[in-house]
Length: 289
Image (cartoon, rainbow, N blue to C red):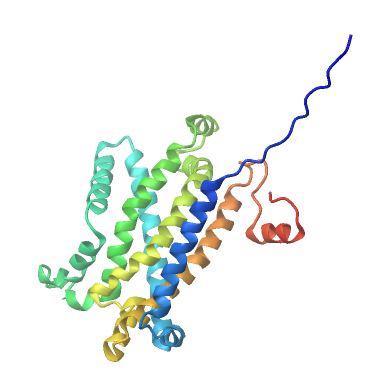
């Protein structure tokens, strides 16, 4: 009885022609955009020159200041109104719902203009002229911070709701008050849910702060406007502003990454590798974690 040798299996490589075509189309589109801007009447030297100009740096510092303060106000208001929203008291719950509905439902720019022009309906405040009290800085802080509080309230509420109710029942069985349960048990666990969107909100705040230009607060955009109204190099100065925003958002994106890693401890079996460790592993030819 004769046996036939099994047929030899040949591996046929799969050719993904669609990938090559899409890659070529993307490269062509990017090359076209780069070529168009290289031929445009743009003085890129001016963009680089004003990137380190003193008034632009001061504007960037004011942008950072108002963003940090407004975000801090938004976080504080968010925690308060999130707890009120989850309260069984119908009055506090309704007030919180109305606050969130009002400030999330109206544009930030409109709110900034209302705060800045408050002197039109309230000429005096606390015995002083409202126009003296409501400076561009204060109007920007109130407008951005209170609006951010409405968004943070929903983020904090979602984080608190993500904690199992058994945690609250266990802490109450140990004799903790509601305030102690919230501070020691619920909020620490809710931070894993709260931190990522809060980081995104702050990065968004850095960009939204440019709306304070409309109420004459001397942030980054207004500093650039004051320059290009004199030299008429509008696009060049707007590119300078864009570069500054990219720098600021990139720095805080890195900070957000490490903050998320810290609060992920104990929840994940293995922490994700840092960008630097991934770079080192790639250079050594090891697989990425």
